Image (cartoon, rainbow, N blue to C red; front, side, top):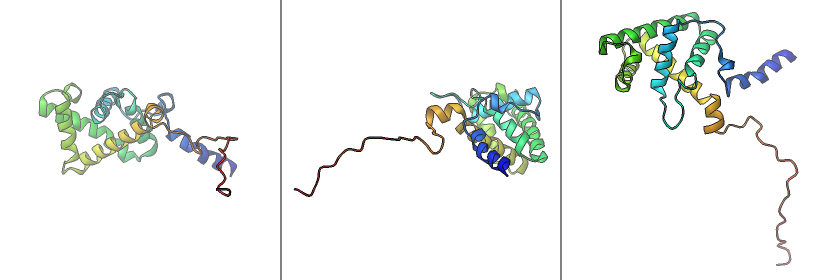
Length: 171
């Protein structure tokens, strides 16, 4: 019982403020080229601005680890198939791989996936987009520099002086 309670207490610590070291995949479900393609997709979803982009923060590793560890085998297979399908669509649309397309071409292909009538393509895009946003928002950089996250229960201010109020009895 104590082990289960300890595990439940430490679970939120892994999900918040993850780093590259904590996300190392124990089981690779994607090939090297698919991993690079996934990195380009997450960068297209959240590009570099005045803050680092998703690729810079290694969100693609987070997406791959979440799918490998937390999703059923069908979702893992759909991720690989979706990456291959996206590259095929890029070849047909602008005669080069997705990674070599410019921002407008990449965005157009991802929009096409999100509006597709093929449920597999739509599910693939939804999975990658949702995990990209979750991974980015819970990355160490975002949690410490942008949202200024403080782990519950927050700060403790022990003995602090309480300012004396003017007495209203004599007035």
